[in-house]
Amino acid sequence: MKAKEINTYLNNLPIDELEREINILKNDMRPSVIKLVTKYSKTLDRHFKEVERIHQLSRYENELYEKGIRYIAGVDEAGRGPLAGPVFAAAVVLPPNTYIEGINDSKKLSERKREELYEIIISKALAYNITSVTEKEIDEINIRNAAHKAMLEAINSLKVRPDHALIDGDEIKGMFLPCTAIVKGDSLSISIAAASILAKVTRDRYIKKFDSIYPQYGFGKHKGYGTKEHIQAIKTYGLCPIHRKSFTSKFVSI
Image (cartoon, rainbow, N blue to C red; front, side, top):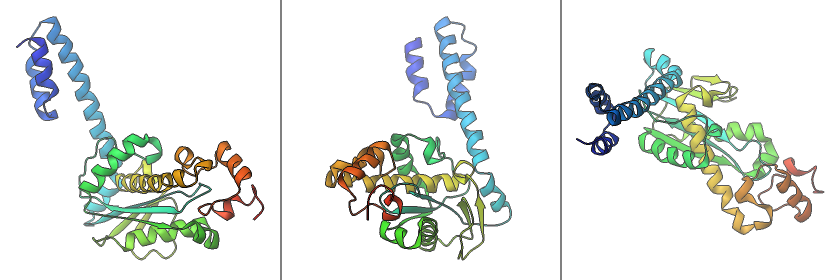
């Protein structure tokens, strides 16, 4: 085959077949083929590095599987810091040995990548659930309690009853099953990373809906966070119904 045909052929191969074909093509000394071998060898290297990263990201889950624990829920929240909107939480139960290329802490991913991974996660999950606590209740019980309430509800409503929960951050008061709290868990556990993506995407989709309802605040751009532009809009226009009064009292008279 000509180099162009080889390139098309290799580009459509699954990884395991690509590795085999590259090993065969290493015997082809044509300069154009040598370039292709180099190109696709780099593709293989990136893949195997990603496989190793995902393996490391799954170490908390694998340790629990080795102890005989069957169903593990990763739990995380999104929206503790914004000045507006509910706080969201997600709980996700993934099958053992789940491989999701690119999965990571939602804060380290682009919005486009989070949206892409959201669909992959819900397609692979044995169970998932996403809940929220309103801005009004956040004002009443404080953000920490509201986030924990949302996380508990997310776990409790899963269709598959987990045997253990991996939770991002600190321990949750009132947790009703064995759990492990992991600081920066969304960077250390594949289950928590999955939950962080579901919670973040759901929250962003929710808050963006208010951009057309209250365009003066720019929710589509800052997603409710306390940017300079958002704070100035609050000072200019006052609060809208989705603002958290306990977060914004220093900017306006309530």
